[in-house]
Each structure stands twice: as structure tokens, then as C-alpha cells.
Length: 334
Image (cartoon, rainbow, N blue to C red; front, side, top):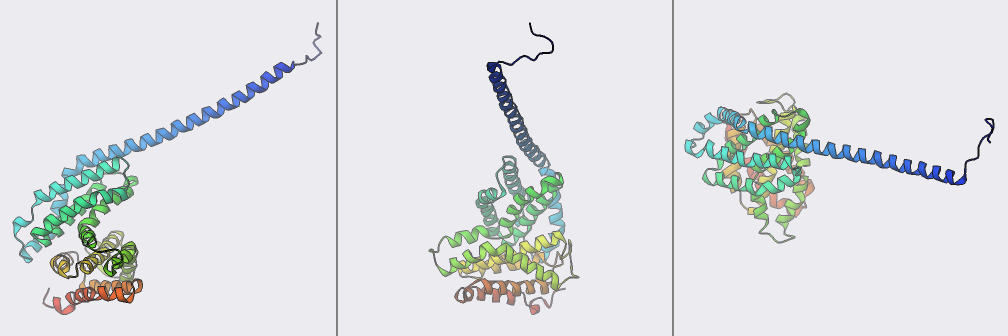
């Protein structure tokens, strides 16, 4: 008989069992926590995908209304330019432009909803935007101004439909669309395809293209410092919206110069870029003095990045642009 004041000795087999039980309990607890964390992670991922698909649905539903608003703004801004530039009214077909807007933006929504990166989307959409650009410029090069503005304002109004937390990412998809419509990127790619590896013309583009955004930002910053008080249609040069559009324009000028170098001809500037500048810059209160200064800065950047033998190939087109934008060209303008 065991007295109440005595402690019983735990058998060794029981101790082993107890230790095993503790170890198993520990393993189970860890497994449970890991399972919960994995479930939570999966839940977050599912929720994010659901959110993207819901956002895509909202954007798709609002696209028709937004497209109408974008066209109204584009027409209000450029209707007088149609008359001033003596464009035939039937060359600006809002229905044809709207059809392309629906196709491209729905592709953007689908890419966003399926977690396709903006970079991948930019590659995938480039050929289609190149075809759209070629289609309109083949009829009347200046129509690309209406097309690019319609796409741009559609994107701006679409961003207003979504929470601010989602705008930054969506903006990257819409920027890819803007870039390929404002800039003859596909034309540059097509022209580059005819050159052999190591040719000086191809080397120029291969050197400048990776630096084009940095060049544009540097140029725009210097323009802002040189014209601190200037007010454009959308605000001061230093405002976010104007800074973004100015940076895009600085990239656009670079792309047109690449095309000139690759095609060995100034035609793309004469037929597209210069008429677009004459149409759009006065409308948006961009002074020619600012454009001329931007060209001087671009020339400096090119000269620093390129070998002298390569810069010589760019110089004639830069000089031609400066001559086309010279003060005496616009002295009879209001």
C-alpha cells in the first residue's frame, strides 16, 4: 500500500511515452500553424485575383461611357484644328477609333485580371498597336493625333473608376498603350530588322533606347528649371501631369529621330511629327521656345552617349528638326 506522503516512481516506459507525446504534439502544432499560414497566403492570393477580376469587370462595364467622354474632350480640343489644318472630316472616323479602343483596352483589362505583367503586356500589345498606328497614318498622318488623344483620355477616365490603390499598377498598362500610339516604336523595330548586327545605325538605337527614359527625365527637369513660371493647358511644367506628358514627348522625339536614322530619311518627321506639333502644342499652350530648348538638350545627351562617328549620323536629323522649329517659321502665327 502506498502511503499518501510517498511519491510513486514513474516507470521508464511511461517517461518515454511522455517524451514522445510532447514531440508529437510539437510537430502537430508546427504543422497546424504552417497549414493555417499557407491557407491564409492562399486566401490573400485568391482575394487579390478576385479583386483584379472585379476591377476588370468594372472597367469593362464603364468603357463605353468613358470612351464617349474621351471623344467629347478630344473633339473639343481639336475641332478647330481640323478646320485650321484643312483636314477632311471623313478622315477622322470616331467609330473606327472607338472600335480599336475597345479591342486594346479589353486586352489590357484581361491581362491585368490574369496577372500578366505590364512589361509582358507591352510586348504582347505592341504589334496590334503598330497595325492601328499604320492604318490611320496611311490615310492621313495627322489623324494619329486624334487617335492617340482618344486612347490617352480613355485611360485617364478609366483610372477614375477604380480605387487609388489600384491606379498605379493599371497606369503601367495604359502607359504602354500611350507610348506605342504617340511614338512610332513599331516602325523603328521594323526598320531596325533590315540592319545586320554591328551596323552603326543599329548601334545608335541599341545605345540610346535603354537610356531613353532617363534622357527624357533629365531633359524635362532642365526644361522645368529654365521655364519655372510657364503654365500649360494642364498646369505648370512642374505639375505631375505635365511632367509626365512632357517626359513622354521627350521620349517621342527620340523615337522619331531613331526612325530617321534607320530609314535614312526625314520623311517621318515631315509627315507626322511636325504636323502633330503644329496641331497640338498651341492647343496645349506649349511655347515653341520650350520645344527648341528641348531639342538642344536632346542633342547634348546624344553627343555624350554616342561615339563621334555615330553622332554624325544623328546630327542631320537633329539639325533639320531645329530648323523646322525655328522662330521665323512661326512668326506669322498668332
